[in-house]
Amino acid sequence: MERETSDNRTGGAAAGLSVRPVPASGEAGAENRTMTPAGSEGPRREAFPTWRDVLAMLGMLVLGTLAGGVVAGLLLHTGSASQGLAMFVGYVVQFSSAILFSLWLKVVRGGGRPLLRFSLRGGSPVIVLWGVILTFAASVVIEPLLELFPEEQFAPLQQLVGMGGWMMLTSVVVAPVMEEIFFRGIVQESVAGRHGPVAGILTASVIFAAAHYTVPPQALNAFCVALVLGCVYARTRSLVPVILIHAVNNAIAWFTMVLEDGRIETTRAMIGDESVYRIVYAVAVAVLAAGCVQMFFSLRRRKRPEGASGDNKLNA
Figure 1: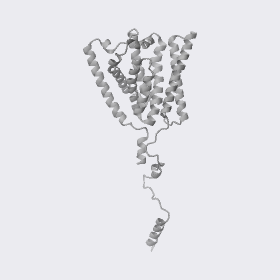
Figure 2: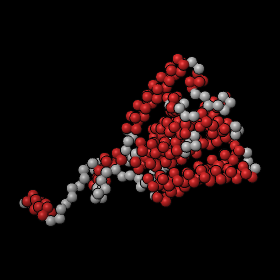
Figure 3: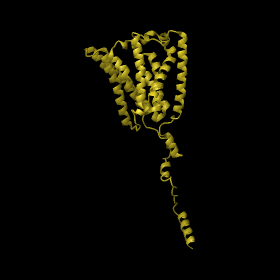
């Protein structure tokens, strides 16, 4: 009788309101985690930045360049500063305005992804050394293309050496810090959060090259160097190694020009021996190829925006 009564109760419950099964051990709250609003299946993406936001950041960089030029011009016109100091102040105005505007835009647009990552864990000497080697290899590999540009297009770079210590400070210290904060720490990091690491690297690299438009050969070299810096940042998620790599790269270029009395010498010219140059070039191609393979597999593991894999697991 007791068993029959128990069965009737169970049947009555089944005939009335449906009873949800209690989740098994380890599945508590599983229903809440797996339920997603209709039409929202798939990985969640950051709302910031849209491509309009990226264009706005690029536009502010252009306006900052104009503002920096005006400030530098006023300092020179009034005799308040030397040419090197005026260029230094103008540069700081240019990138400070772009950085501050981009951070403000992120707050206004509700971007939740943290920017400006300075983790010391990414500052491994091995990673920094490997990045310096890759940037040098990339510069050697594209050098035959740079030789096609008329020599007069390199003149603006040669003039920098004559601006003294302020210009050296700008090139070797200030530029690596401020440029990496803007291009990798803000542009690449935010675009990667919405569109994936490859889009972040390419977007930041194109804008980085465009920022060096005044010297077309330098813009081409800057694009290749930016790809290396972008891949290093995507792997380490820290600005520390890319700032160090950028600083070493600029320091090598600067002091090479100083030693050559302001002239820009190619690797072929500095080596002098064509046979030795061909060996150096072959080694550079091999190193760059190895680096590209390594970066490919590294990016393949991070090809989705952050959080995508976790969301897919929860929605499975």
